[in-house]
Amino acid sequence: MQIGVLALQGAFIEHEQMLSRLGVSSFEIRQKRDLQKSLDGLIIPGGESTVQGKLLRELDLFEPLAERIATGLPVFGTCAGLLLLAKQIKNDDRRHFAVMDITAVRNAYGRQLGSFFTEAEFNGIGTIPMTFIRAPYIESVHGDTEILSCVDEKIVAAREGNLLVTAFHPELNEDLSVHRYFTEMVQSA
Ligand code: GLN
Image (tube, rainbow, N blue to C red):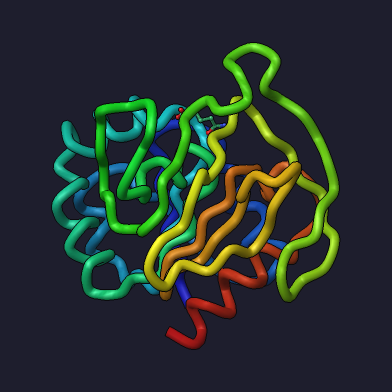
């Protein structure tokens, strides 16, 4: 199994470290030729969704990745990655891959004071640590999308088929369980 980590901007190194601790090999996707490698799953890290969206297009990565996602490539989007996958973003006109049937709210906890740590239940895993950094949350899910976790009545993790998103950053804590969950998704895809 080989997982590509989008490495244009944001917290990508931490995802690579989590995968390596799980014994899963990964490589960085920085330019189009990186897509020649065999790719079983993709992680879109946290950072700035607008910057990542712009770089994806400028580097001609957007179309080829959109095609792979449309044909079932498993994707895990954290924070900004969630926004790149959302079909609807309530307070932003920009749309990126727009494949997942969720309505997200950007910078939903406020811009400056929006960073916090908590522990909450994640369906099928148990209670896990969650670090939020100027995070979005999911206001509503539609279609077949399954809610995996809520914090203060806000949806913070969801899954639709091969798409997994978290509003928090599991790569910034020691707990490997969300990454393990994703690698299991990749395995059974
Ligand atoms: N606020 C960022 C955005 O709108 C997301 C923050 C994050 O990824 N930690 O893209």
